[in-house]
Image (tube, rainbow, N blue to C red; front, side, top):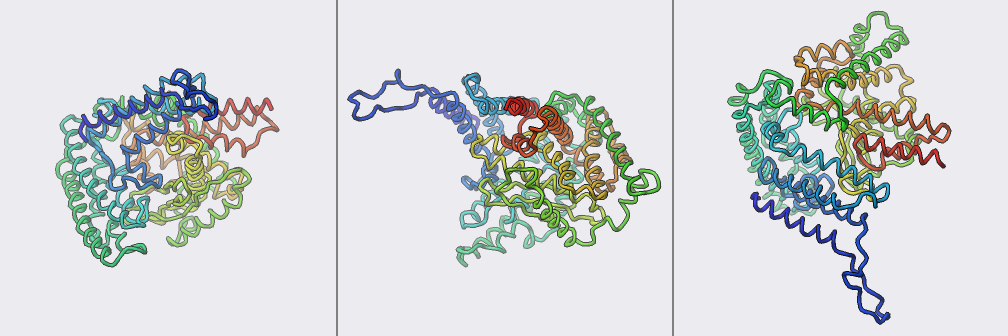
Length: 616
């Protein structure tokens, strides 16, 4: 898409929507009235609610047109042969024009004439669009787009799982298989554009770290070492659905092999470029404050992540206080289990004793199945509404697990047809300590991400941007809050499960210290690793992966603890104010029923709910 075409399309969309918002509703008088139809001057004007939701619907349609991947994640395979105009001038400018259009149209709606729920939707839309526009400047683009990949959030690691036949992309029809071949062309083009963007950064002096680049080279080496016949890209040809003819199966298998070879060639170009050209130029430092323009970028990322006007120094000090508090709780637990020695020795004991280490992948998998059943049996005491989407439990693919987090969640579809998936990591089994299994499941599975994401997208009364969007502080804050519900479900009566949840809480507190330490205070990688090992029972494998994650995606790790502290604060406020009227199920429904709100918007909403409950 050319810039002129992008602007023309945006202009056309603007004209159509302006007309739809301004035009009065068409109404006819009854045929037996003997009067002529109402003229434009006498027609009833469109309500502010209708204008607002017309904007939401149109904005969503335009966003999906620009982002076919978002459409696929919703279970809609329209335009599924495209990945989108990623890393292009036209894609960037079309998205920015879209945001400006949304804000201009929102300004035409009188917020004071909206109902309470509509005002909430108005506020969230205004917040998200304003933040998006602030990030869509040429200055921010010059600091981000020239670093298009890293080892943690990289299309080169996302795409194999996406295209392997078991992920989000559907493989039910012949058209689905053809769409996948078309997407492969977009992926290959993306890789070549990524190389060009990296070269732009080499010229401007905005560079990735040697650490992240080195890991990316290893990731690509691992992928390329897999024979084409065994690659994830060929997997769909080994499990054709019914209804595809033998002739089509043969044709598609040959086409997939040829296209996979092209993907391998593109990944080889990327690997060779990163290893031979970019790595020598990449920066030795790991913190954003040591990158050209990094201070401004980090300040923006902190506010984007937390949705609050917090400074890195404020967050750093909050982290230090939380670490001290949780450390004292771990010391009490140490006394409870009658362990003699220092806290560090206690951590070492749990790290190294074989009884805390899963013996087999199958045994680790079964442990999560058992936890899931136990949660299902208890969850009704805390929640009045459960997701329609089922929750599956799976290990990561062994081909990629080395570089994955300890666990993650992939959302299901809004209609409940595609289940949500809780992924856990079985790489280096001795490092996957079993005391953390319960809290990991509560966070990534139920009632954490699975409840929050599923209930939002299943609520058809919400506009799409609230059903499918969400701020990191809310999404991850809810999941961390969900871990604490293990107390009420009785899981933490077991001291070792409690040890696991305290360690996970410590991890989120340490993130406040380490992320700001690296990106605002100039901490080294070794300094960050040593701090985390000294203050937690995490294994070195886990700590290294965490620190490398903070280096790759600055600011994101701050969201968890900040969000959880806010939700916990709101729950205490509600319980204190309402006393015997406080209903935990009603509180959870109020927090979850409008999607992933910015924290300030959530707080205002809960305060209104508390006042309404108190007045009953």
